[in-house]
Length: 129
Image 1: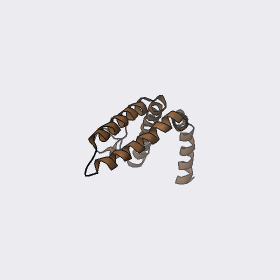
Image 2 (image 1 turned 30 degrees about the horizontal axis):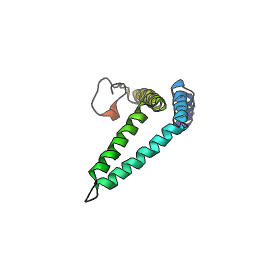
Image 3 (image 1 turned 60 degrees about the vertical axis):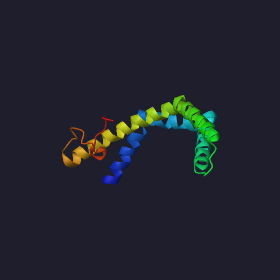
Image 4 (image 1 turned 135 degrees about the vertical axis):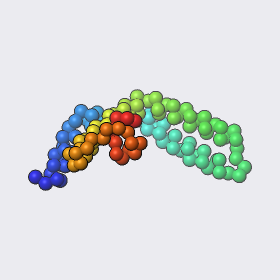
């Protein structure tokens, strides 16, 4: 069996892991929530409007304040939305899993396990941040 066949098997095993299934379900819920998607679109539009307004020579400070207030409201709504929170949590769990998998592969290649934080996340097995 070659490396790519083994990688395919690993990918299939990962795809069936409960953490990746949770992530897929969270993505579906996130993408199919109309109110959340509406808020995300408006957030982007408001960010663009703010950028346009603050680059004007004669900016309207009341308008800038109103746009910033709306951006803050949308940000709070998005961050507190259950679908967004679940997506973030599920993604974090998958990131931990993938770091553990990469750490295991690295150990089998080098014979060394990451033992402490080097402050270089590319050398990390995960779990410290």
